[in-house]
Length: 472
Image 1 (tube, rainbow, N blue to C red):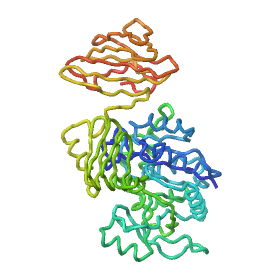
Image 2 (cartoon, one colour; image 1 turned 180 degrees about the vertical axis):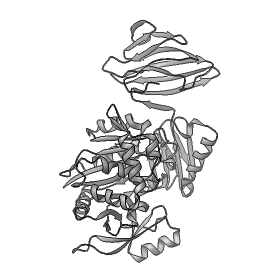
Image 3 (cartoon, one colour; image 1 turned 180 degrees about the horizontal axis):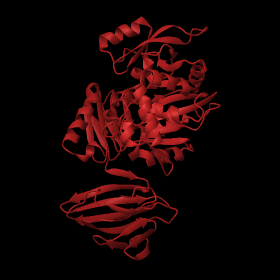
Image 4 (spheres, helix red, strand yellow; image 1 turned 30 degrees about the vertical axis):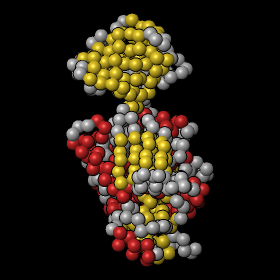
């Protein structure tokens, strides 16, 4: 038996705005612990025997971030698949099952990239137990024994026992997120579990069920793979054919209808980190019940989540609040209404505010840029280029640029001239001039960029050559 971890990393996490945004969502953030949620997920099964390198499914915009984060924790993925359009879990898992090298023997362990699990040892033990049932052609999921009548999770109703030791049960049905009264009845009944969204089954068994129950998904996914292409180290699915797949979760597509669906109840601490209250729940609290992250000073504050990613935040005399400060946005909310932050994100997007999607710091495969100031016909950015990082060979139709090196060494092509610049040296890039910036050194390169012109949008970049395959 070989276990292939499938990591689904396509979410945007709007309930964790302003830290989580579609350009840099929650699974890529260090929200709890020293690594990002994606890195923690990838490391979760590392101690298990017979576990293959993970397969990750993510969107195109985040491909380099995903690859770099895995590389930073010493994990080389078996494959990173790029989803050209957002689809739910059933199409994503179908792609993964089709990509499995030996689907008749391979057991898939499907894990969202943005969940928290406190005990990796207990998790690994549960996966092995469920995988053994999967080898007997069961479609397994992990159900979390509820510790409270939580209304933010879906539930699984467990049926009769499927094993001699009575630790694995048939799935009777899946339940949507309940209201408070219904959740109370679920917990009192003792036969309902939180739906973890973690699934374990043989790739061949899953494909047989998807062909029986959702043939259109299988047809679309096969075509998307056949008409897809490799892009550096990534597998890029064909957009047109993948978009033809029904947009449906694996719960509704397969698990609710399969006669061989099973659930393994588990007791380890788990959270889908669906919002700021969830982070408060799992966070380390001070003597007044506060979870504090970053440069924060409090006086007489209680039962609150307070985080600063930027400047000093001071709080006096507040209870049950969420305060999150980033470089370009501040959230202050009652803790019991913090999930409504998704409505704020919707309003920002309706007004075409960039804060709804992107941070002040925008990551690129070569490093990042961060806006410092902006005004009429100008903007100022800080740019960081990683060692051996190289921006595309490009030009602009509407803006000129000044670059001032702060630290490190810059290799700059401007027109036909190539020059090396050190700290306090600068160069002017006239409008329309072909140019390129790269870092030939061993340390990060930092510089200040001053743009001026009648249009300063990021889409005024004509890429002529690019080592990251992003040419126009």
